[in-house]
Image 1 (cartoon, rainbow, N blue to C red):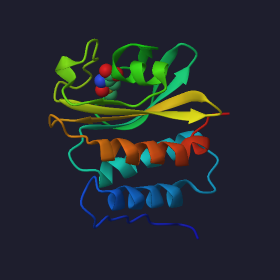
Image 2 (image 1 turned 90 degrees about the vertical axis):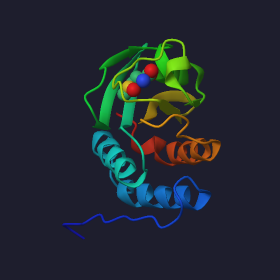
Image 3 (image 1 turned 180 degrees about the horizontal axis):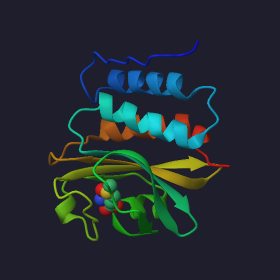
Image 4 (image 1 turned 90 degrees about the horizontal axis):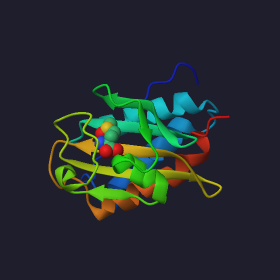
Length: 167
Ligand code: SME
């Protein structure tokens, strides 16, 4: 059907497994059948921004060689290039593991793109064993993200990985 309107709403408590299942469902519906990686990342960033409360930044960094390059996002303009291993995003990309940071001021090497950020969750997006991107979420609230959020966004990353791979 064209044009389509996307009117997503989640009734479950933010951060619950049911909330994350619905977020994944919406992400799935939004990206199914679309091959353009940039379009999919843009819509996913907007979806997360709309549905996940208490964020001041939500988006993607893409792995390009030994650098992370800014991708589609919602929030304030951000650092464009982050060396692999640097900051929270670089740590997630280099290690291939999620970084759940309750207090960014206590994270060595944290890169402050927005002074309002107090906590952060970065989840790697992996295709064929390779980290191709990270999902970066920042919050102005300390300790905003829970292990359940990490599980939820890891499942989301697995779902959308092949749909944000740039050819
Ligand atoms: N804080 C991140 C940098 C990206 S911005 O927050 C959007 C980091 O330390 O990797």
